[in-house]
Length: 69
Image 1: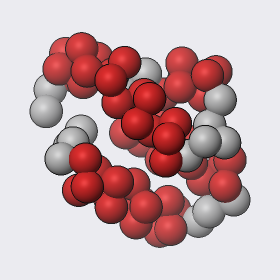
Image 2: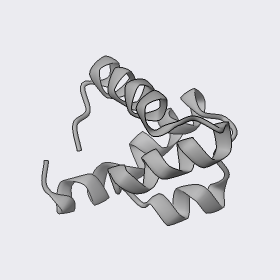
Image 3: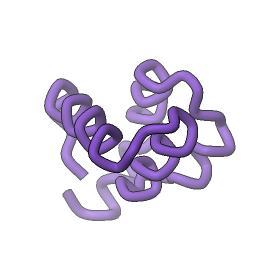
């Protein structure tokens, strides 16, 4: 999915992301702005996950939401 499309759908997915990872703040979402690697880092930071755990959860979320960065 190209960067323009991600930005266009970001508002929709932001709500779904916050449903899954409620500890992420609005400021976190502003920093992420549709960038997968940024989201991965914020999940690690807020939940104390290692990269592998955060990647696993994010991949599962992407698969269940039919959303690929």
